[in-house]
Image (cartoon, rainbow, N blue to C red):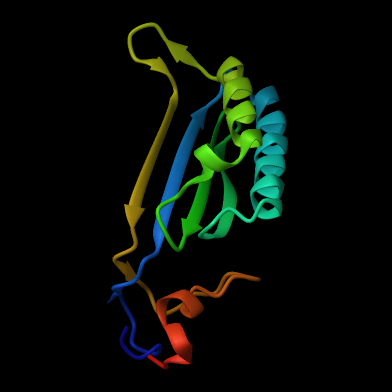
Length: 138
């Protein structure tokens, strides 16, 4: 990674993975229960020491669309390791908008981090520790 004061994107070669899941909800009344499920899954994941989980966030696009975003130091393994995640996934299907042709409004994507900007500020989460192992300086 180039010097932290250099503006723009900086290529990185690190084992950092991102997972994003989008939920299209039937109604705004389903947003709060979906957030509570997310918090419970995150507590369970942290409590069971899921390998590689670095941090996660719940994002809201509008009253009927939300996302779960997570960062990992290895391929994400939440579904196979945390029963609470499986239970929450089963419950969320009843809250989803379902198109007769396309099916439920739910999708996920995973990718490997390839670049970052110089401002990696996120309270309580220092991605530099993962990107610059052994205390190396950019």
